Length: 103
Image (cartoon, rainbow, N blue to C red; front, side):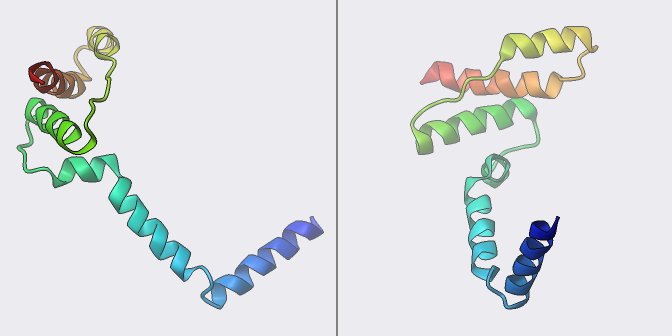
């Protein structure tokens, strides 16, 4: 327990001196650049789930030169068992796969 107290004091002292500010800013920048949802939100698309999937596939193809794989059969099963509570996800996947089939 004494070691934990020493570690806490070490981190606290360095935090108060501002030694973690650069790491914090670097993490925020990295998070914004690598966030999947941020990439999706930056796309000019409608709120329609099918169109959002289509736009995401286009973005992936143009920027990353590959497509992602989504468990469409699993989502269909979930929709069947849950009275279509995952319909937004299945529409997104349908849109994604529609663009994928064209390219």
